[in-house]
Image 1 (cartoon, rainbow, N blue to C red):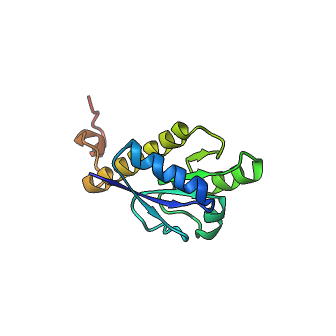
Image 2 (cartoon, one colour):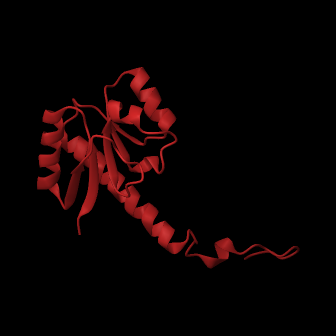
Length: 136
């Protein structure tokens, strides 16, 4: 089963290298996008220019991988947007792929929780206690 990844990176050489690495590394369906669509259900791989074009707050920011420079301004913007995974263009490709895989796992986990309705598998954890009764 392929996982969809939306790639919105302005640098065409870097985007092509990342696309090739994703294609070689696993079951990824890579979709290039000039304008990233935050309604997209898969992983979003964006650069700082793409982050500027996305309305905030980001829906499900845990599925976003931001590729940016390691300067305080860019990192602060990522933090404010709720982005969990931030990597640099200078990071090794394997590090970037690891961030993408982690985001994909977070997407899968969030989708599984939605299917379950967010209900804990431990029914006792969701049962309110009656006044005067103690749970053992």
